[in-house]
Length: 358
Image 1: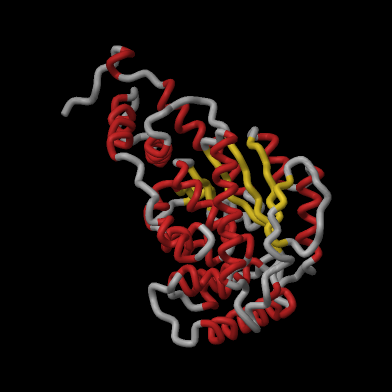
Image 2: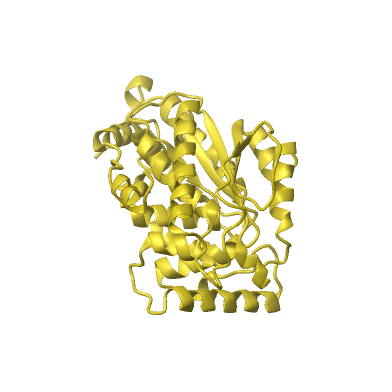
């Protein structure tokens, strides 16, 4: 799959989970010793994951966390409170085990892989690092498209390769995270184009901008959108949105989500940037939605609009905006609890408990 046309054609082959697995899961959930529907969202989560897994309730889940890292040319326009060097510094922090995602991955027994798809630095080989650099940072979307067609295709391929890697690892549940100074600017532009929302409604303070910095960020996004999409229409072409105002890590995450859905893996979105990739994958191939779960709702305003666009309910709402996959990993034990209840609770018949009268 070396061209964008190949990608579009291949993405359409993603199959929905079979209805019979979902129906069987719902039937068992309704037979457990509890009032109908009394476990609320846990029942929906269990049924969805069981359908994705073709009815398998095998536990424990084998979990993976994939953090995609890249720099953004648009940081030249002063859209972040932090210098771009922080991207590389945080990748080193991940590899040394000192970041929040390392702590949570260890706690919840999720294998962490860090993917360098476009960091403006070079790294020595290290355990947990997956080197896949397409180029050292995307281009400045304020001046030109963030990626060429060839770079976009290469970044998408990185994601698909990682989905095959995850499948070989036997991961049943994957969290999709990211690291990239400036990437909330790209995610806000993507969100505005996909949802039709005004830029101001989907743009927050990122990693800590003051009001002056946020206004500068808004102006950069608006100018970028006028340059690349002078007459925007809905629905926007997701491939062109990604190529013109996206980022290398967002493109790789998009390919990863598309590939993981084809592999039949349950996918946990993290926050704003991760979910922007999921929204692009959904716009390319709507069947992707059946494989997606939202780990949490970010404090970033655009995340709310993306979740509504995808029709996903977040599992957690903790006012987080860290990224890295942290919110997704925090939701993993909730999913495991849902599956454990499904597998281990007695049914009315097996426990000799009377069911409710009609």
